[in-house]
Image (cartoon, rainbow, N blue to C red):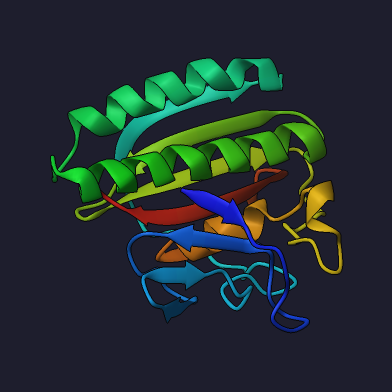
Length: 181
């Protein structure tokens, strides 16, 4: 569950709180993990992702395709689930959320040629989205009113165990590694 908080706790805090399991990068407070923005600096780290096995791939041209992508992703991660309890279901929902945020960012701001994938590592899912804006690194919003959006990259960085971006073949590739649920 994601809740928008009513006040900031300093200039680096975002308005988002993520309830549930402890996330990397955030601060744990009485069962609540506050997204601090520490996991997503003003620019994402430039790094190649870990190797991963094949999985699902999509070529996307419009945000209207995202409901289908979410549905296919849910079926795929359920078929490869390592946990069938509530925590596993939460992890799978977080993966679908991260994929949706990354793909919608690419479709809105990425200059076309959007490709998305979910691939498997032994203990994680690698979510990777590429687009045609190779000269534009992913930039989390800074100093923006949360009602205007722009907190998706912070959220993804908090959910992920690792994240980064790189350029190959004239395309920008943004990736996040999320625990398998």
